[in-house]
Amino acid sequence: MKATKLILFVVAGFFLIFSFLVILAAFSPNSSGVSNFLPGIILAVIGFILIFFATRVKTQPDQPTNVTVNVDLPGNVDMDTIKCKSCGGTLSPEDIKMVAGAPVVTCPFCKTTYQLTEEPKW
Image (tube, rainbow, N blue to C red; front, side, top):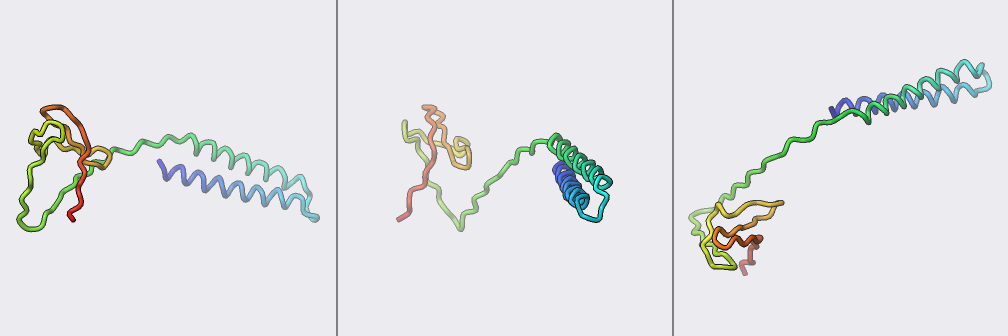
């Protein structure tokens, strides 16, 4: 549907440009005046009607995008256990969810929710 809107706007732009040129030619010294003025007005009306319909074309909302993040660790890496900051309970990978691009942990024991932060290594 986005292509239809774009095409309608481009065609409307051509109609409006040519209507301006035809109306401008109606006022030249060696033209009859009225004979060029009316087609220019008609072209402008057609251009505005196309713009009206282009703004009324419904676009379908984008489908939600699922993002899967895979972390590939080099070599044999031992993972430390993650403990809850509130109750000290052991957290599993299932307790970690990505919310708005940030890892958020929900403790299954005390139901505390907080964002994971990585401490600097130095």
